[in-house]
Image (tube, rainbow, N blue to C red; front, side, top):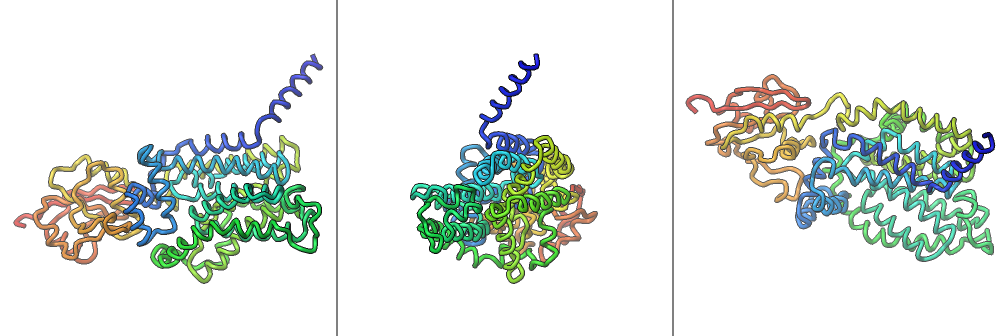
Length: 509
């Protein structure tokens, strides 16, 4: 019996060894991010994606010329996707979930290529269970896709350095170009790539620790006192990205003051908050930092690529953010897999049961945040915005001839988009003189003389941000004056983050 048991155990281990290293992390990530994919309502940024992606390519080009050039290629991609699958919440978020699953699988392969299979597997499983992976894998924004492309580009770089050839460099060039078109700030990863390429070129096989024992130098005859051709091929591989992304970067730069007017200059305490921000959990972020440090110490020179892929983009964005408002933690989500790779190296240094226990502990510590992000994507989690609830109120009481008015109209809350998304047949937006599509913008233009535009309207549904007992009193300017002059509140409904009021005409109006 003992011999049979040993043989069955060995057979099971042999079967496990035949499982591709990328498969368990990819499947686990897809299972985790797919759970509750449509639970949380679309939040403001996703509403912007919906608004943009449901426009024609021509209207998208006009939008990119006005305000959101940086996200233009992503919107075009989503336009094609939604044309195939529709614009449900799950459909909008599915590409992000698939991208995060791909990122986990690619991370496992990268870890195996740089260190060993256990490192890759541990890194991928750890990445799958981070609350941040679910948060950005359940969001209709480009961050998950940028994360997958960042790992893919790095993996292709390692492959090209190990076995130089134009076909491999062409693959790397395509991945870098796609990365830049998806997320401009993710191109800061190229600084880490440049460092690795330079060291590999100058040191040849002496730089094997940078990208694995084989990845750093493939030419045994290369002299260590001069660069080889890999550095020049890397530069050439960046040319397609420069040609494609350069104009986009220039255009996005002219829109920065409007696109990022809500961002404050970076401060030193922002760095300490970054791990919790990208991991979407302070506890999990702290644990990840500790494991990353241990893994870097264990790998020594081999830690250069993943460590620089974490630190250099962070330092670059922080430095730029002290001068120009650019510091937004979610813009750096693409560095998380490289931190997980280092953490995976730390876990690979202990017994397998202990490593799995740490991975499981990470998942347990993140459970409260996993549950919270499936309730709302707003921050703080205790301040959701119930666009669907407001839409239901209007749908239940709507009559022919009703109108709707939003306040504020030009805020990043996108009150109009949120209600319209959930309301199939909304009342007439009575104050709109030019909608956001015709303007090539994310906001519509309103009537400069509201009283004239409201004339003859029997009832108005007023939607305002925040919870107010007297929402009519909160509307500022000429719009508020016109509403208060001719209407009175017949009923008020308060929903999380929003208030809806039904306004009826004053007697004798």
